[in-house]
Image (spheres, helix red, strand yellow):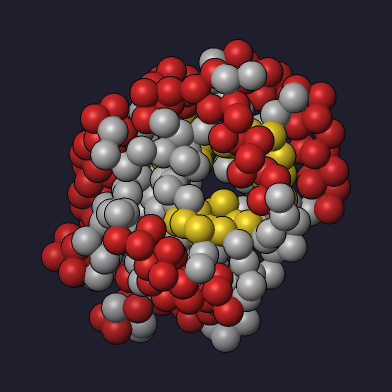
Length: 296
């Protein structure tokens, strides 16, 4: 069965998403898409309401989540399309992720304040959509705070040519490893999520394997498949054409399902437009359904 699909869309239930789940369903309907998966960061707060929104709009909403994990000393993101949002195993993972994220945020804010920048936990909590904030979201809020606009240490982020990607630039300059506001990550191990995935009903798919912070190798993928990885997000705006070809070949060689995900957020990723990723096909959904839980 055919029909366009996007497995990786963020709503405002993520700290850094702009649009309500129902709005995303409307976008999908207007773009003639068959299905989308709202895969918010470490939360399933969009569910179950958005499934009903999709049903009314004639768009299938595939339950999902994007989990922040650690593997091989690097941060890896894992999608769990088809997840049971009521799963106790998933709830346990989310609880731990939220605790880690809030601890990380408090430490980052303390370091930011020590550097002389204006930002408080109250500011962040008020403007993070009720979700644990990601580092880029913290950077965005810091740069939007008018008290920081005249700080000479931040001058380059306000230049017109840098403004679109200023939060990512700030992240790299301050939150990355070895930088002044770096906080060591303590998220769940990727292999532990893969072990728990059958109990959640989800089909584990590695997000944007070629992203600069992941740099997924063939050996990484082999190890992760042995622990239960089912799919690889081959088609994504993170990848160059060369990376897409590389990961397409990797997925085929390891018998992983190649999936497509735009990672749409809204203004935090201005280069990613809803509905612009053409490669997602409903056949990918059927392959994941057939394989989840260890099925052949």
